[in-house]
Length: 403
Image (cartoon, rainbow, N blue to C red; front, side):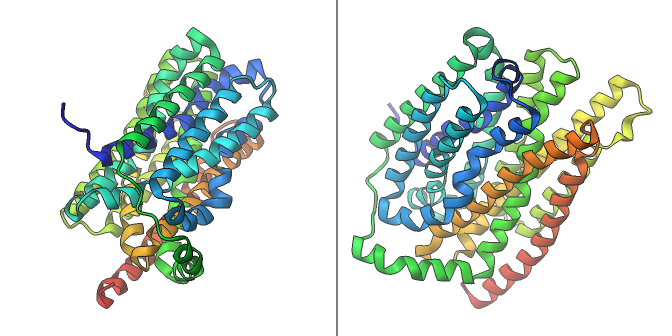
């Protein structure tokens, strides 16, 4: 029997973690009835999974080399499993919020070490393509959860859905623990003596912070749009099964951009051009999806146009994360700062995901509908275009200096 590529196992572990981020949107309509979850509480439930990443991403990145990247990822999947198991017994929105925050800590531990692990497991010629594949872990896991969630919830309830994903994370943790090679861990004295230097190098370099901010404005709008699609379509009267398929497909097409970014970078495409394309598509797609520009059209054509805009938003926007993961590895100020750089990026990505859904929910609540949500998405996209321009200058300086 042929042995599975260890780098692919890392991606599969990330997908297992991403399922927990994507498990909530298909359950929101049920949770609103069963636990009395309000729209604003739903926004926080969507984003609280990123609380740990927002507050601890840099710290975990600094500690990962001392803890061991494999050990960190396995521990994260184990925590996700335990929190999801307990979450299935939650009886009120606040208990569920607390456990979502714990899941966020597990998600951070499970996802943050992956780029560093991939760098160790693959040769340099496969780096861009494999990191592009890793960039697809979130949309793939989210899509599987969005499509698979409704039938599972209909069969066993939202409690069973939580428990099923807890079991899957346990299996992933065990598989990675057995199949991945042993960690290459720095000595304790070296880890203690070097973390301040790694921190200073990472925060003083322009590249890591620009990459982190770009990921924040990307993730804020992507999670807000994909996370609330099931609620929007349910309010429009679509059947739950159709809602799951439509939303799952919208999340899944994000993989196209992620995988394409790795291939295009491998072929010599300029990173800033991929970022320009991704953020422009998100601006246009977000505007057409939410602004009342289709009011004069036949309702069927208007719905098709809005859904097509969401697909544009997600698919071409998928060029962004794969490109940013590659830039994070390339612009890290040294070999020993890759995990720290990725942790810093994860921290800002989580901040964006924590802020995006509640902000969109707040705008929708004040406006009495979703018609002004494009203001949030377009604002994020414009900020992303500005950051892409600055990244072009930083990378040009790095290439000139030979770093």
